[in-house]
Image (cartoon, rainbow over all chains, first blue to last red; front, side, top):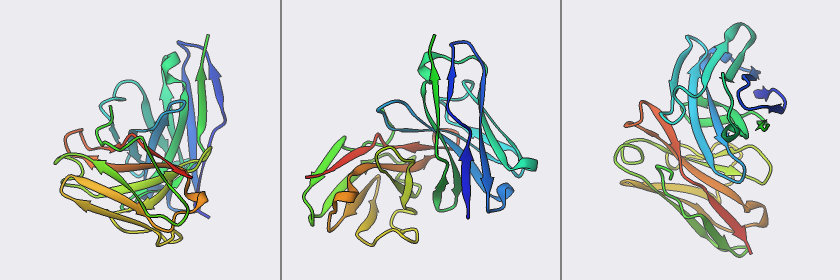
Length: 117
Length: 111
């Protein structure tokens, strides 16, 4: 079964760093892009960026460029989304999804990030 | 403000046909494929339509997509209560450094 399993919910303080993960299984992890999508509480979906684990080619939405870092470790079929200094406005649900020619066809279950002092 | 514009809400009664619009520009919908995603309450989004009008396996043929110029539409016929969800359009945008954009989403209520 093709699936993406994300790391668990996080509660952090402003200024702290964080790295959340997305582990793929059931397919060739290095052959498909992995995208990250933010959903703030009660709001819509926002495309953050995408990585190709095969060669780590990474693209960012201009809205998120410089705010987050997307990476991948193909040896363990895992993609990451990280922050160096969290803000309260980073509080959201974050989804990873496999992006292939036909769209984002497989989604992770989501990781809730809460940033509060 | 989303790059792709959708109505915030839509509604219909069981059995009806409803359409949800998605308006963009020449740099996104006008020159790239449109995708539609369904997000049921409390769940991750699900791919509903790809390449403007194609359905992944398992998606009922009650769902259909179309595109014309810089606009696209999602139609749902034979509306059912389980169709109550948020619907998002998406497309690559050539003016945004090779990134994809979502519409603001449309909340569909089945009355």
